[in-house]
Length: 130
Image: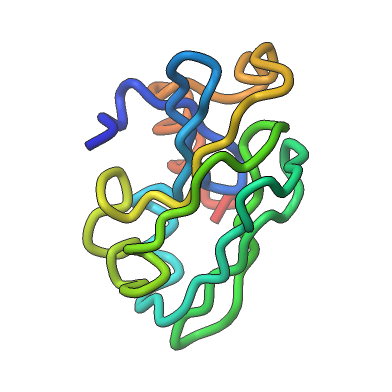
């Protein structure tokens, strides 16, 4: 489980937990509530290049399809096969078993562009951000 308090956040509701040059990424609890019942995820391929704040995966719910944007630039080191097999994990455990991918960061300094937990909590209270 990646504690929400230890993660960094994007304005498009992805989280990143960085450890040793690799960032684990997923969607926030807020996002999974907004998206609702996730029925399919198209995860990035291992070795794919990511660019911060650009689409690297797709989330489909009973309501609509949504982009999953990479919180950091780099190369996909792992994709969560369990999530691909059971997309509901993103709803059930967005900061745990529902992680999306692991990215070997090409520029760890990009983490400074992301919000910390307290800033993200304030961000999601803004009605215009939903």
